[in-house]
Length: 630
Image (cartoon, rainbow, N blue to C red; front, side):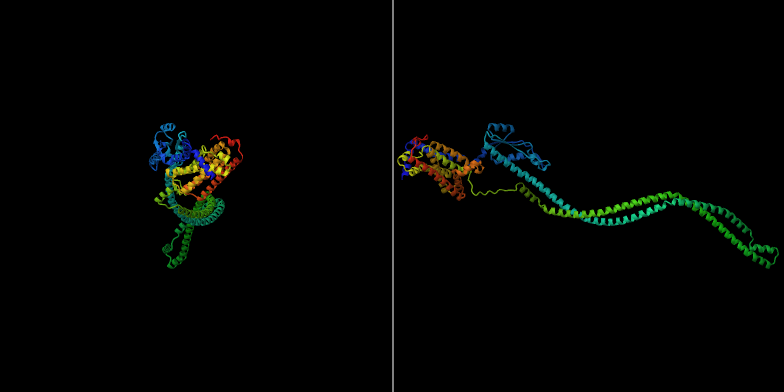
C-alpha cells in the first residue's frame, strides 16, 4: 500500500541519525512529562495541607455562661491543633503579622478579646456576632487564602453548632417552663370561668334586686317629695296651734284659779254642816221627842247626803279643772316644743326628700351598672372559657419533652441536616479528578510537538505520485501512530505509575487513541493549509481549548463566548469521554463524545485530502518554498 510506504519512509527519516532519534524521543516524551509530572505533583494536595504554615492568635478573654467560665477561642485553638489539618503556629498578633509579610505564614487566624463574650451574647437582649479575624496575603499564595476561607468556614460551622445547641437547649427549657405555666394558666382560666359563672349568677340576682330597689327608691323619693311639700305648711299651723294651746292653758289656769277657792269654800261649808247624829243629839238636848227627832233627821239626812254628794262633785270638778289646767299647760309646753322643733323637722324632711331623690338616682345607676356587670360577667365567662380552652389547646401543641429529649432536640436544631454523600461516579483523588483534562491536553501537546519534526506531507509524493488519498493517509498516519504510542505510555503512567483507578481501561485507552488521531488530523490540516501559520494556529487552538474544555471548573461558569467554544471544540468531548470511562459513568455519553470526535476526524481529514488533491494538480510557489518549521 502506498501510504504504508510513505509512513515507513517518514519514520526512517525521523530515525535516520542518533540526533534525530533523540529529538523524536524527546518530543514523544513531552506529553508524558506534561501529564505525568503535573498529575503526580497534584495527586493529593489536600492531603499535604499539614505542611501549610498558618499563624493562630488567641486574644480571647473568655466569658461567663450559665455560671461557668468559658473560652471558645482557646477551645477552637486546641481543636485546630489537635486536628492537624494545617501546620498551626500559636503566636502573638505582632509576630503573626511580621510572619505573614515575610512569608513565614500563609495566613493568620485570630480570635479577638470579645470572641467568647460575643458568642455567649445570644442569651442577652442585644446579641453580637462573634468574629473570626482572617488575614491573608495573596503575595504568598492565592490558594492559601482559599484554604483559609475553608478553615474559617469549618470553625464557624463548628461553633455555630455548639453555640446553637446551647441556645436551643435554653430555648427548649424555657418552652418546657412555658408549657408548665400554660398548664397552670389553663387550670386557672378554668377556675376563673367557674368563678365567673357564679359571679354572673350573683350579678343577675343583684341586677334584679337593684331593679326592685330602684323602683322602691323612686317611690320613696316620690313620697318624701310629697311629705316635704306637706311639711312646708306645718310650721305656720303648729305656730297657730301653739298660740291656741297657750291661750287654752291660760284660760284653764284662770278657771282653776276661780274654781279651786270656790270648791274650797263649798267644802268648808259642807264641813260645817252637822251630821245626822249631831242633829239628833242636839234635838235630844232640846228635849224633842224621838218621833220628831226621827222626822227631822229623816228630812235633814237626805239633804245632808245630797249636800255631801254635791260637795264631792264640786271637789271632783275642781280637781278636774285643776287637771285640765295642768294638762293644758303640758299641751302648751308640748306645742311650744313642737313649734320649736318644726324648723329642724322641715329641714330634715327636705333633706330626706333630697336624699331620697339622690338615693333613687343612685339605686337607678346601681341597677344599670349591675345589669352591665351581669352582661360583662357573661362576656368574661365566655372569654375565660375560651381562654381556658385555648390555653389547653396551646399546652397540647407544645411538645412534652423530657430533659433527655430536649437535649436530643437541641442537638438536632443546632445541626438539623446531615449530608449523605453518594457519588454515582467518584475520582480516587484530586489528581485522578484532573487526569481526563490533562490527558486530553497532553494528547494535543504531543501531536503539536511531533509536527515540529514530522513533515505534514511528502512534497516528493505530491509531485511524483500524484495520488492524494495515499498521500493524505501517509501524512496523517505517521503522527497518528506516534500519538497512539504516546497515549499508551500516558495510560500506563496514569493507571500504573500513579495508580489511578480506571473503570473501563480498554475503552479509555481506545478513546485516548481516538483523541490523539483526531488531534493529528486537525493539526495536519492546519499545517497543510497554512504551513507555519497553521502550526501557530494549532497553539492558539490549544489555548482556546485549555480554557473552554471545562477540565478544572464546570464549563457553565465560563463566559458565554467560551461556553459556545466548549460546545464546538473537540477537547471538551475527549475530556468528557475519558471521565465517563475512567470513573465508570454513562456509556451513552461516551458513544456521543466518540461520534463527535469522529466527525472532527473525518472533517479535518477531508479538508486535508482536498488541499493535497489541489496540490497534486496545481503547484504554487508557497508549495515549493520550505516551511519555517522544517
